[in-house]
Amino acid sequence: MREILGILGPLVKRGRRRRLRLRREATTARLAAAVAYAVEWDWPVLPGVGLKTTTRTAAGPLCACPDPECAVPGAHPFDPGLLAATTDERMIRWWWTRRPEAPVVLATGGGAPCAVSLPAVAGARALTALDAMGMRLGPVVATPTRWSILVAPYGLERLGELLYAKDSVPSSLRFHSEGGYLLLPPSVAGSGQVRWERAPLAGSARPWLPDVEAVVDALVEASTSAPGGGSRLTY
Image 1: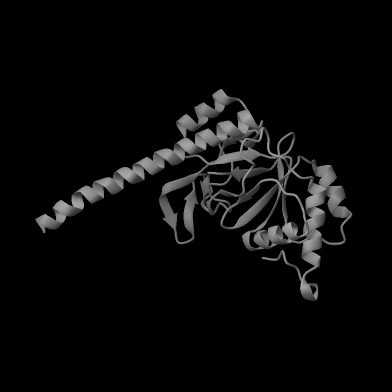
Image 2: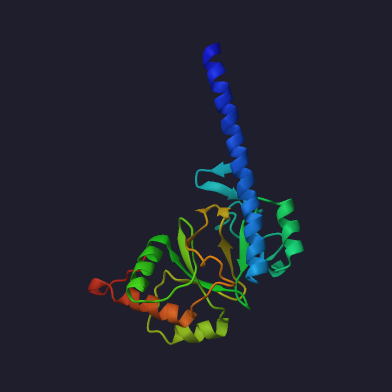
């Protein structure tokens, strides 16, 4: 037994050191990403509420907010609130120095990117269909449950006019515009890891974003062109 412990001891220590190193790298990456979004791309960000790291339920991890039945655990602003989103580097560094594991939340709308999101399976189908149509896309954010296509800023009035003009719109679509928010990589929330499915082009001063009308038009066409009249963009 002593011989076994003597062999396993260094391995356990190395494992612990590796986990600590990976954790430090992850928290450093969130700060670096938040600063890059704000300073290089002028995207207003703020820290998300995050998860209760020591508490889990049968349904998964619990949100750090006071609501025990939070529908989007870890994936929303809490303190500070959404209106605090900023591009000020000093404020961002202060936030993530205090809470290095906080998710990075983008406040959508205004001059910031907006997004159109779909369930993950529908999102994968949509990207395949849009590529086949020759649709030019910008960055796409993915979680295990939803994919979000970033689009140029648009207001709620324009969105209303756009949707009103359509005979039908896939019910799986969600719109993130003024007053909304979106988690950005490399955040982690209750739904899992946030990543780039389509990353911004390396070295781009500010990522190019398609117009929301072009994206919605293409998504509606991709949905209604499914064989048998069904939708490719269902859950």
